[in-house]
Amino acid sequence: MKKRKPTRRASTHYGPWHVMLASPSKPMQPSRYRHQLTRMHLAMASITSGESPTDEDWRLIADAVNLVETLVLKGVAQDESGLLHDAITAMAEAFYRADQDSARMRLTGPGLAAIRAVLADWGVCLEQLPERTVIEAHIATDRRIAEKLRSYSLGNRAKVVTRFEVQA
Image (tube, rainbow, N blue to C red; front, side, top):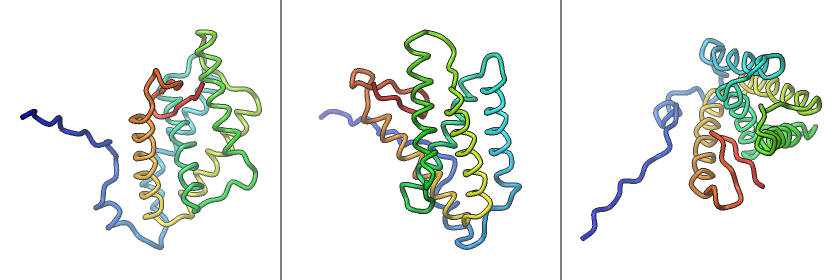
């Protein structure tokens, strides 16, 4: 009888206890999200004006875009202006250009504007949405990205870069 390989669950910062203990009606305390939002803004500054943005900077921006996308997919937030789609496209184009030219990843002007708008929207969501909704969005995003990482392989027309995928 073959020994079964243990399945690995996606690691997530939040768990069921966080969801149960979170307020279903009050927004998250600013002290709980200020650090994350500050790091995302610093990453955006590094990407726009830094000489060589790190992979961590790109991951933080991709996290913001993915979290807002999850809120839109869940129906909690709306993307009336279409800037979320523009931000996703800008990230994908930056990854594609960097892959083709073997150069540093850079965003175009409209892409920068779209990602800035999405980052601002994420800040507004943190200020206004109930704490439980924000935590559930984090968990749903982690699961969604983990599922994409499992379903796509590098030979399956996709290149997976940290937590953001680019389809060729």
